[in-house]
Amino acid sequence: MWQLYQYALCPFSRKVRLLLGEKGVGYELVKEAPWTRRDEFVDLNPAGETPVMVHAERSETLIDSVAICEYFEETVDRAAMINGTAAQRAEIRRLVAWFDQAFFRDVSGPLLEERMKKRIVANSPAPSAAAMREAMKGAVAHLDYTDYLLGHRKWLAGATLTLADLAAAAQISVADYLGGIDWRNHEETARWYGGMKSRAVMRALLSERMEGIVPPKHYEDPDF
Image 1 (cartoon, helix red, strand yellow):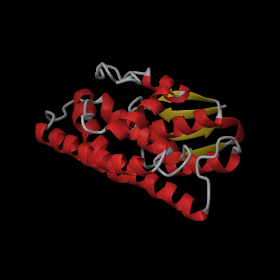
Image 2 (cartoon, one colour; image 1 turned 180 degrees about the vertical axis):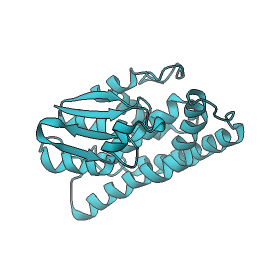
Image 3 (cartoon, rainbow, N blue to C red; image 1 turned 120 degrees about the vertical axis):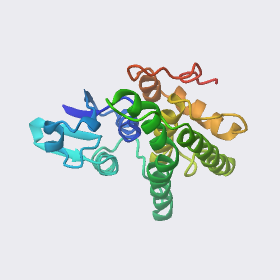
């Protein structure tokens, strides 16, 4: 069976888990704290980042969330998540990159640094209130964009659920867990995200907790 090395608030691992759940791929979770630079984990992935997937019986190791998602998209026929015409597939990939890169840079990455890592890593400096405010301002701008997309489309990339929705839900769920999302005036995104929360694969993910960090009361509620 596949093993997935991850930690509860890794947005890239969450994206992979959502894809695996939609495709019905079985796997075992392995808790990994990449900031500790554990030797055995760095041997698996010299970049020292999650997620990493290992299938010992097949001697296969998959590294990087984009490569992992593409691997299962190519090898599992069920629930295609990068589909449609060439132009549609390009739009899906564009939005996946948007959330993996821009949203993580502006919102979930800074929130993870300030509200998670600085709490659990010894000798870290105090969290920066200014950095957290900037991340929350960034979240507003990004949700303005998702509101725009969802005002013209049923799902983020078009008429069907795709990897773009999974990537967005993964990043937004982490930011929401860390109290970085102000849902006021974002009705379109809230409606879409409520639907994502109702999916079985998302429900399982939202039930997990990062030790020592409590999410807002609305975090699991699809009707927030």
